[in-house]
Image (tube, rainbow, N blue to C red; front, side, top):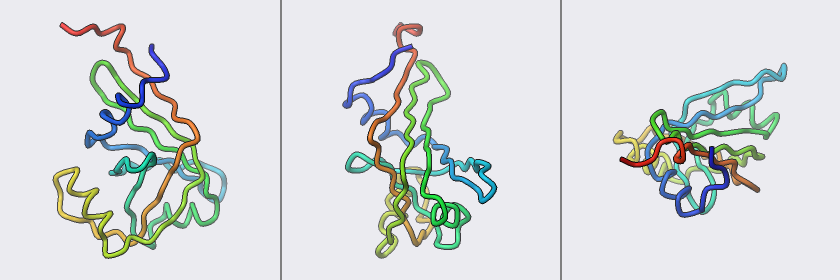
Length: 133
């Protein structure tokens, strides 16, 4: 397994509209895993959500979050982040519209953007085990 993929390979991978999984923490400390659409922008992940979404309630109480983007076919590239999430207003729903467009859908009309900025990304793929050809 390869780790520490080059930044250009990470950026290219994250441009693909793969459904990510976002982890937030419930009041009792249990993890809630949610499939989400995202965009990779300015070195961070952004997820559009409604203001009353359960993920927002979790993050207002405990800003810790994790997000994983992993493909389901060889070479099984993946990116994982653990971060303190910021909740930002989605002015005019622009982020929601751009994120939905990435996935070929009309805007979901989110009110907020969950922003995750990594100190470090954990990356991997199995390209050595699945040579081209």
